[in-house]
Image 1 (cartoon, one colour):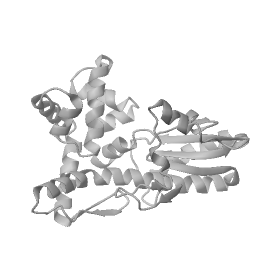
Image 2 (cartoon, rainbow, N blue to C red):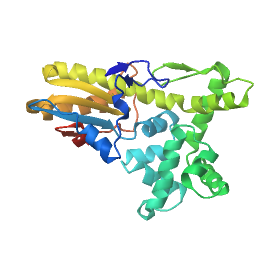
Image 3 (tube, rainbow, N blue to C red):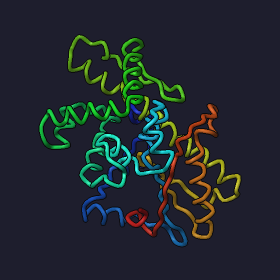
Image 4 (cartoon, rainbow, N blue to C red):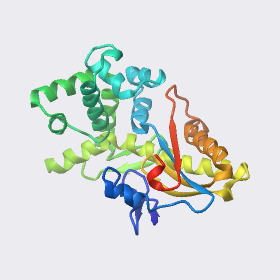
Length: 281
């Protein structure tokens, strides 16, 4: 496949000829297709995935105390958020509460409004509005940060990632309400998504440098990048060593970058390996 460095507006890679970033995963046919991508002899395919990277970035950039607290004690973020929003102890959060928290957690990253939240949650608009308001009352640091990003974008017609990469929004002061609203919604979350995109590209670089320093670069091959995930083909005899090196590189990006960025929120990477792409999870 071809990977395009500037193939998306967020800064992530895109893939074409063929697009390997959109292989289906939830259907039997999709799993069979994934099973067709196999490691060569004496190798394994290994996948490394950032855990909830965009929510961690949202907590870092906003400095929101409650969201930071959940990540620092390494609790499940959706359960932790549900505990605050529904005002119950973590042990009392049920599956439905967690489901609702998960919807709005990811929704804020993509600029979800009350109407979209209502559609995703089910129920009435009034219920969705109450849930939306309660979420941002609880996570006021995140609310204030998103509002500041929006004001900055309205004034300057662009936003910046943590690393200073800009994304421009020419329609943000449009007289056409639809275009203006869409630009505002996208701009509000662009710094979060863009910073996550920058982080995984730096992780690729640092992992490559560390594999080279360890003398095993020729035995470890990056074959695919999908959203928050890196997939390598690795010789079995160096698999454990390579796995440790790649995970450390992914988790240490912020402190290692030229910013030497310090945060209490840990970046976490999980991994899995198998003989084919379907078995790497």
